[in-house]
Length: 626
Image 1 (cartoon, rainbow, N blue to C red):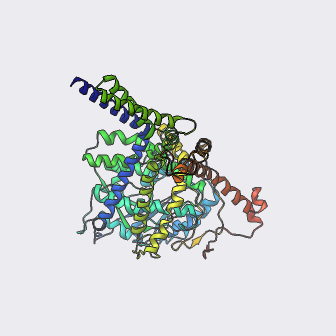
Image 2: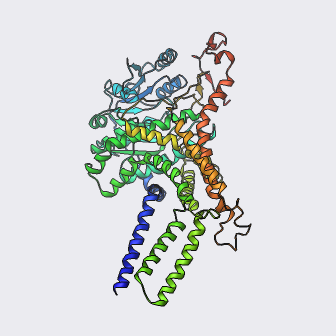
Image 3: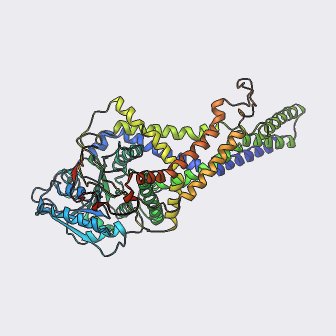
């Protein structure tokens, strides 16, 4: 009895050590799986609750006596290519002129852009109060400009539109009613209504094609579900309308985080208010069409979410009163960008685990051998000892085979276990998003379109550039998140815009200068990641059982020999990650070289071409799709 009880204790200790070992070595993977499960649940709920979500997002009725005063804020900074288009679209929105105000919050330091803004404002109908608000400094950047403009208006509602958005004429007419009940009474605890982003240049390149997938996923799948189940979506910085009273109650705009929109949304939530999303109201926008612009945008967002987490996570977990399930949802929502450093760490760790056999074979054999030694030490009958010794010899032989230089560690199942859940999740995202996005790509924005099988298949092709580009962005996003944890605020690097044309934006300036954004030194970390992955690519190729002819082209009779596909997975995985990061690292430089080589020689030397090319940039032309 005592001997058997001792064996049971030894077995429990071994199992506990094994689980502890797996948790310590695979905690990034467990965290990733947690986010994947949360994402799957959220998307499945959104698909199941489609009709109920649409019903809950229905608008109320505007008051009959007098419509509310609305202020449209257009924050801008050197938006030469799109400023005229944005002002003209805002002035074209249908709303009583005496109840509409347009604030052009201009922090530009480019004289030419200032001249364009002045001329664009003069073209607005005189009954609409459209004026430019300038500051002598850029303190607080976009948040500072919004707060400065808010203090200079008495409007009941404030609509915020970035310069790259082209609002539809019925934007105010369809969005403002959400703040009222069906009887015309105002909903006092509704702070903000967010509408869906459209795209006017999604087919310009693989980069914009890829971005349309995650934008559609976020706005078509995630936000309607969050709005229905939790009465909370974060403001995305544009294409939304705030209650002026709600902004005041939440403490106004602050520049502590580079995602000032999301930060204000959480403060409104903590103040007892809720937010709402309507996926049927689509506002066309321009997606970043260069890798340098896209990386600048992603850096600002990732760094800002890290700052938001640093500011509000403790309050969310310890002070804010809500149900445990909602608290978990809000926590995962707030921690969305922490996936980038976790993924980056996992990409660094997984080759080591694969090379050392730290998933199944090697640790399990070591644990089994330790268990057998403990059982042999405890003693037993002669028959039991013979069985134990035979199993020990078998375990030693397998362990020697795995750790020998002739047959390197065989853990070729682990890449499949690491990759397949991610691929399955991405396939779900691509299919669900492609099948349910009905209001974004119609020629008449906001009107549902008929989705066919061919439409779904074509849209699912966005998944390939999406996976490749996101893989290549890992080091950049990891550095951005760490930078956000280490500092609050920071410089607001605007996303360069070129004024891409589309069905809702036909008038653009004749020529816009090629713009660039900073890289912030992250390329050194990207080159380090590439070097690291190249090392493991060589390692897995050099020690491949296929290369060393261990299998002798016979994969069926040798149980220790993996199939050709499984044997190549570690090599392919490391090479894929390294090539993706290298491509995304070098892409901005190739774009810059290409754009520079296309300019005339005088432009390369920085001379002004306006004197030589009889071009009046202040005069817009009709874009004909060329």
